[in-house]
Length: 180
Figure 1 (cartoon, rainbow, N blue to C red):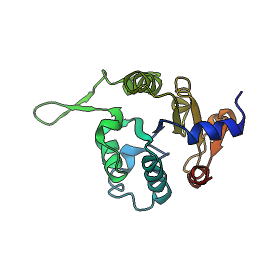
Figure 2: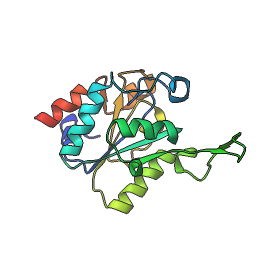
Figure 3: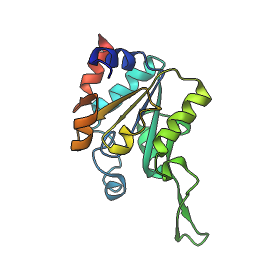
Figure 4: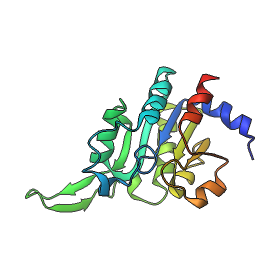
């Protein structure tokens, strides 16, 4: 088990930080709230944290089991390039009818977030990747992520709260770590 002090050092020296989206970067679960989510105005601390990480030349990624069309909108509001988004793609027939989702996306399968992090380490040679999220699928992405930070600012999932080595309820705590 890693000490809290070591976890903080790992976070502050990370090459990349990966965020879950639903109930982490945005307050709700995506598809039900798409109509409401036309702006990210109330996500001030999330935006500030992403900006601060980017100022430190930390790569920021969004990894979600949600839908890419929603996650790309969130990414654009946070100044995260769409190439740093990993999420499920919806498929439609030529007549516009829903045809399912693209099962070739790693996020479409069990353990997909971990597969994305493994891919990022191999492609970019990152030494330290941090995963931040509210759910069990986020937690199980560590390893290959080097650190998992459980987030309960929107929804508290008891399993994550009980098992995360570092658990926060506000991104302000991470902002403070970057200032020290």
